[in-house]
Structures are given as C-alpha cells and as structure tokens.
Image (cartoon, rainbow, N blue to C red):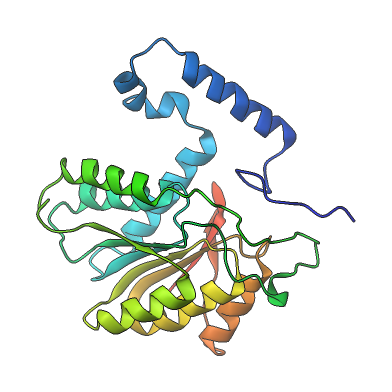
Length: 252
C-alpha cells in the first residue's frame, strides 16, 4: 500500500484541489488591487475550506459563551487558527480580559513521533512536519493585532516556544490561576497531545470544549491519547458537517 506523506495543506485534499491552490496563489499575486485591498477582500481570495474552518471556530466559541477561561492552541503552524480564535474573541467579547489565546509550538515542526502514531491506513507521521519556523513573524502579527483592539495594554495572545511535552507542564506550574475555556489540539501526535490533555483537562470546567483535529482519520496517536486521558469517562464526539476535520466534545 502506498504510504502517504502530508503535503502543505491536508491529506484530504485531492490533486485538483492542489492545482486550484496554485491557481488561487497565482491570482492573488497578480491581482491588480493594492495589498491593503487584498487584505480587506478575504472572502475573494480565501478558499471555501478556510472560511468553513473560521465558521467552525466561531460556532465552538459561541458554545462556550459565558465560560471563563483561556483558549489553548496546541500546534500553531502559520497562525490561522491562533488568529481565528483571537479575532473572534475580540470581536464578540472585546472587554473579556479573562480569555487569552495561548499558542504552543516547537516552531521547528512536529516532535515526538512514536509507535502509537502508526496508522493502519499506512499514513506516515514524521518528525519535522508543519515546520513554519515563523516565531518572530507571528510576534510582528501580534504587535499589529494589539494596535486594533480594546484593552490593548493587556496581553491577549501569547506564544510559548519549544517542545510541547516540556513547555506545557512548565506553563501550568507557573500559572496556577488559569482555567481553560477551549483546548484546541492540532499536533497530530500521541505524546504532545497526551501531555496537553493531562495538564489542561483538570483546568476545564463544565461547558468548556476540547477540540482535536483529524480524529477518526489520520491521527491514531491523538485518539489513543484522548482515550487514555479521559480514563473511561463518557464523552460525546461531535463535528460539523461543513468542516468535519475538527472533532470536539463538551465537558459536562
């Protein structure tokens, strides 16, 4: 059986979708608008899938309305998920200083592949996948983001750089006051996913949400980590038919 490797994008993408992405990139680069007009024309240049992802994030955020706590993004990559949460938060709850968006990433690609990440579908996870190497670039984006929101003197987005299996326990030990509203994990691997669940689940109250990318598809290690961390507790896995890659459950 052919072993599939993750391209930039998704294992779910067809060949025609990759071709469409190339056409979309060419159109964006050669469109006659000024750069600021392109920025302000998000729906013109973005894909249906990216808009669906943003809508899914909005729906999950609304499900946790009035739940106190931070939003954790495990696996930042180029920052679309991180800034999706951040922009939704400041748009819908501009004065809620109780909700920070905290991104954990090695910024050197995936780390910690184990035997539990081997799939029966022969989808091979590799060290160094999703290496955007963009920590400094994201800090610049955060600086711009802070210039256009209320309570800008209070930190809204925080990036934690390094091996997640080490940085998460350290962060938790240094922030004993924290509660978690949404835990969104997209690391695709058993070890960092288990570490995040073990450390943040105890900080999640009734009504908070755990969301994990790729369950029941290409991330066997994440499913194993979820089962182990929940320790036979009952939970209802759900997704949105318009964006099924994001699977979630509500803490009850």
